[in-house]
Each structure stands twice: as structure tokens, then as C-alpha cells.
Image 1 (tube, chains in turn blue, red):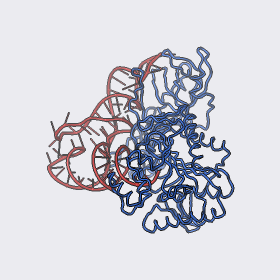
Image 2 (cartoon, chains in turn brown, green):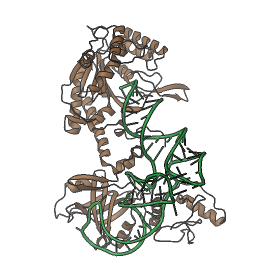
Image 3 (cartoon, rainbow, N blue to C red):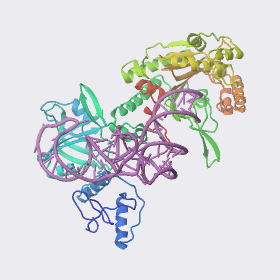
Image 4 (cartoon, rainbow, N blue to C red):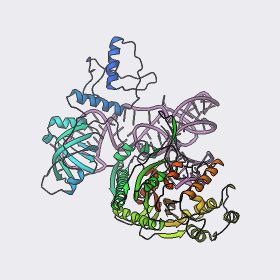
Length: 556
RNA sequence: GAGAAUAUAGCUCAGUCGGUAGAGCAUCUGCCUUUUAAGCAGAGGGUCGAAGGUUCGAGUCCUUCUAUUCUCACCA
């Protein structure tokens, strides 16, 4: 069927002779009995070597491939031999598949030109149907030998599911009612060498049943390009992700705020409690960190005189991976001068509700099996009240010792090293957060957990901060930004002490940041929204891997 | 980090008590000019995730490893 003995057959069907020398090829296997295939260059080289020394069949570096790829590679060569370029440079597309269906008029025979990937083929001798998939959807093509001519029809017969072609013809409706294109010409635009997984579908009682779907999650993530080709709903999720980001961006720029870019490579990382990725700059011979947040840089810009700045930022945190966490993730941070966290809460409600309406045309969404209403206003609850409501324990004004006792009563085992703020956070995280399914603003966190937030003017030990919890998960975090440089220095220095005691997530003193706010930062509200999580909620995806094109996996 | 599950053809999956590896789709050959999970007839395709072990004999039993998935713990 194919090569070798060093001889190359151009096609399984059409030829039995070696291209360069015209001799008969012989199927070859290695010592383990495995058939191998080689690149065209390797084949030619091998052919020459074999001509020189027929008894010395060295095993070249190769890919071990299956018969289907082998056949397609031969087909590619065969097409080239027939003077057909399997990879031409362009094709004039005038219609998308969606437009053809949308603009269809009965009997009009509207001329169209479409291009896309062949997804199904039904050959019936001298006429055939196949489906083309382009970025907008699928369209059926009907092709008759009488009309496209024998040459074109023969080329078509060589094509495979997965090949990309251009078709010119006119729109019509088939006997069974499907709007289709009656082909007048066909052009191969790209030969595919790998068989794509073929999923078939059928309507049963009005429900679409899919057979043999490409469903192995590992392969879907590793080969997202295949996932996107064969699982159309995946594409919709990412289109929506893009719409969410543009909708938010429009909202922000509409307020007159400036989109900015700040360093990803930072000599001192800060703005959040997390372990960083470390890297090295060769020319400067210095250690750098991938940012865990961009907060401290955006605040420098507020010092510099911008009234509102935001950045859609990739952040990197060297921590665990699960369905809510990817080592690199996207966060939008926003800082607005002269505003406080109460103002920011209203802004967030409006932003999220509007975004949902813009992308879903609905202010409710399904997430993790719950219907979530994103209608404003969202519920607001202080962290103390929330704990009282969900545990029955009033922790207001409790000392560290009392808090520890309360936690024990609730059945929580605590690290003896952690102090009040952290204990409150533990109680909240364990007993309250998972129950907050509908959007809820949790406000007024202990100062200790929030070294960059401004303290409440009337409540010592409490900062002006809120988090928005949806579906039991934090989606944003915001506070009135601390702008007293003296207190900020104290807070960072006490963080540094925690760090010395082994808290790897405690912050580092950033002298340049302190210098900046010593010049004076106006009162300011800051916000971070986890984009991946917001996209999960608005698209109803249960795993962060389904809203990131290329989630992190270990190498194959 | 802990536990559970999974890994067999290009895809989706069977594989009984340990005895020469199976199906559907895809591919190939032949027929078929409005089909749509097209159809009919035939054919080819496998290092059974990797490495050891037990056994006359391992896809199957044992050990180790690798990857993934799902829980749980930690971080957004």
C-alpha cells in the first residue's frame, strides 16, 4: 500500500510506484513490527541513501503514526503530483454559513462563496453532501458530478473530514428542508493530516443526542484546538468571556477611567497575600517576581494624578490548582480617587448586573446547580453579622482567647499561631462563605487581615472593606485604600515580622510604594474582580479550566 | 499535600474464571445523482499508559511509576 524499501508511493489508491525512481514500494516495518512514516524530506533523503546502500536501512528519527495519517500524507503528495497545491494562499469568502442561512430566500438561488472545515461527508456515488464548518456555524453543501465536472469531483473524493475547502455556488433548500449550498466549484484550501474526532448527532424526540463526542477532558485541555473544532459550545463560552471583558472595559472607559499597563516582572511583589513565582533577569543579574497583584503600581498612578485607573491583569500565584484556581489568572483592578468602599459597592453591583444583561440578556444565571439572581441591590452583611446569622455566635468585641474558644465550640481546629483576624476569617470561610449562594457583600473585615485598607473612622480594629461572594466563592475584593503613609508603614512592617516568623504569604515592605504615598495619595477606593470566576458564573461553567483556553497541566 | 477512580484502535466504549484483542463511528475497496447517526457488501487498523513481578501463559492478578479526573485540605 505505501512505501518502502526506500521507495515512496505517492498514493495508496492511485499509484504503486515510487515517485523518484518509479520502482515498486514495499511496506516496511521496524524490528518491533511497527510501521513508520517520515516527513517528505526524510523520505527523499532516505530514498537517496537507500539508492546508495540498499542493504543499510538505518532507522531514522521518526514519528510512529497510524494508517490514517499515513494515508493523508500520501494524499497530500498525490495532490501535489497532480498539480494541486494543498495549501494555497487565499480564497475569496463572501458569505459566512450563518449569513447564508439567515439571508436565505426560497428559489432565489443566491450566489454564495463560503470556506470552512469539512465536518461530515455523505457520498452517494455521483453526488455528495457534506457539511462545512466556519467560525459562525455549519452549512451543508450539495455537489453533483454533472455540475462541478469530473476533475473537481474526483478531487473531492480524495478529501477527508477535517480538510478545509472553499465552495462557490448558490443557496437552495434540500428535499428534507435543510438550507444548503449547491456547489458549482470547490477548492482545497488546507489538507488536514490528522483525523479529527468525528461526533455525530441525531434528533431524538426533539432532543439532540451526540454520539462519540470528543469528551476526554485531558485531551480536550491539551488539544484545545481540537476541542474548539468539535465541541461548538466551548467556543461559545470563550466568545462570552471576550464579551464580558469588553463590556466591563466599556463601562470603565465610559466613566472616564484610564486603562493602563503596569509591570508583570516586579523586583518586590505585593498587593496580596500569596506565594509568588520567581524568575531571574540575566543582564541585570537580579531576582524578579511575577506579579501576584498590581495594586501597589495602580496606587502609584493615583498618586501621580490619575483619577481613575484600571488594568485587566494576568496575575501569578504559586499555589494549588483546582477547579477554582489556576496558577495564572486574570484579575481586573480598578482605583478611583475621592471615593470610598460604599461607593464602590454600588458601582460593582451595577457593573455585574449590566455585564450579565449585556452578555446573557438576563440577570440570572445557573452556577454549580443554583440559580443565581444578579439583580441589584445585592445583600450587604458585615462579617460579624454574617457569622452571627450562620453560626449563632456573636463574636463582636471578642478577644483572641474568646474567639479561639468560639471556634473550638463550632468544632474548628485552629493553628495555635494564628491571631484574631485570621480566626474570624477561618470561621467565616468554614461556616458562612459556602452558604452565600446569592450575591452578597460581606463588609467590615478585621484590620489585621487587610494591611492595605483604611480603618473605619468609628470602629477601631475594623477596616472599610468588602468582598462579594457569589455561589459560595469570592469574586471580588475591595476597600477604601489606606493613604496615611505612617500607618501604612507600620502595617507593612508588622507584615514583615509575620514573615520572619514563617508566614510565607505575608507582605514585603515596598519602600518605593511608601515613598509614593508619602507624597500624598488622595482618598481612593480600590477593587479587584476575579475575571475567571466571574466568567464561570456568567457562563455556568463549573471549572476554571473551562474558561481558560490553555489551563495549566503537567507536560505530557 | 491526602484519598478514590480512570488509562484498550483516530473517537466513544466492551473485554466474563488468567488461555491467540472486540463493537459502533472514522479509514480503505466496490455499488449508489437530494442525503443528514445516509445505505448495502467487503477489508485493513492495537507495544491494551510505562517498568518490573507471579504464572506454562497477563489487557485481566501483584508492586512501583506517570498522567488525568473527582472529592478533601490551602490560596483568588
